[in-house]
Length: 188
Image (cartoon, rainbow, N blue to C red; front, side, top):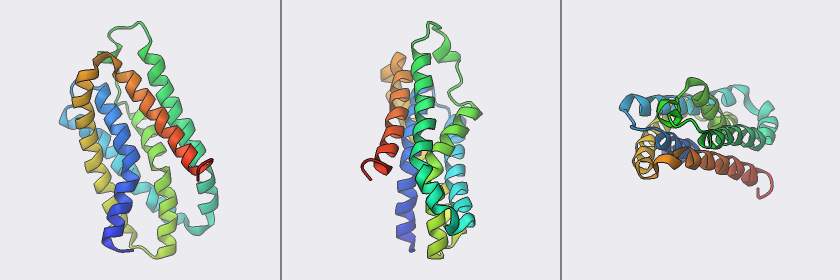
């Protein structure tokens, strides 16, 4: 697998993280560089870790991982999105400003949910004898940059949406979960 192909694989794997990073940016009153970096580190780190784990597991788990990927993504993303929607309709007016959309627990769950496909890609890397260190460095680095940009972009858009940020973020997460599920089960 050549460099250009690896770059396209990395960009493709980063798209879910990018969309969720936009949602996180929308939920922030003001996106500070360290906040964008935190989101980017979680997504970039898990996008690099999962292919390594997949590569290490090799061929024996591929059919099991692939079979559950759409279900796991659907459950995790819809649960987080549903929680965001539920919280957006609560009467607590200060919740938007005082809540922590960048909690470690939330970011970890989202990072795992968006990197499950990367786990299966890692198994494929084992079959193709890809240099795993080079591959995970590219995947992690590209996802970091794209996720950082997503938080910043989402924050700019979020300034126009204000009170609807949680609703939009929740809907985005649910759509991603449904999209992954439909692409890998019914449509795929």
